[in-house]
Image (tube, rainbow, N blue to C red; front, side, top):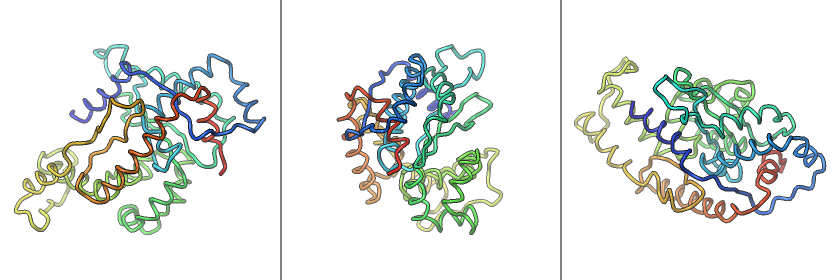
Length: 301
């Protein structure tokens, strides 16, 4: 329930926050074919696609994936109210409407570097996910941690096969990563140390709280801890705070993650994301946002 409330809070928050523009380092649109593709879209539909990309880039971390090296970003939205008690405002109109319009024209914008798809996230609650994958960054991060991925997915697992599965329509979380929080955290760009701690805490809490997903074998406390409760408390203390650093201070949202702020890997990751966020913020006043975003999406170099 807590996870759903947090997710709902983020989705509902969209209606109270402005959407601004983004671009990247003066991308030049020199392709007449590309210009003809944009011009072929009616003005109303172009505005809906504009709002979609504004939302994804400025509010859902897609800028870090589209213009930088974050392997995967995703955005959730309600496709319908989960029940009659939810107000109409729970519909995330820019994403819901924008995605529907985008699918009418996505054939005009073939991408060799990115995968942009929609998956069911929580079907029973009518929550869907728009997922952006930076192919090169995805392959790199999986290869860098291939023993971890193969220990969970099998010895035949390769990043290239995962890309093929995504392109064939398989769900990133449910099918490709098999719902494993450790693998999710790695491909979301959170490092390795932080997802390991997060997954371990989830494993312990699942057992202690006696949920339906309780493991068949009781987990044992790791060395240095006398009980699972003690280990879980230690992890929670390590992962506390700082997940929304400077959230409202800049027009581009930070990368949201739960992290161990004292770990060297985390410090390096946060430093990278801080620099990238500032770079993105410097580009928000570019007037030709949609052209720049789509030029990056369709670029081949």
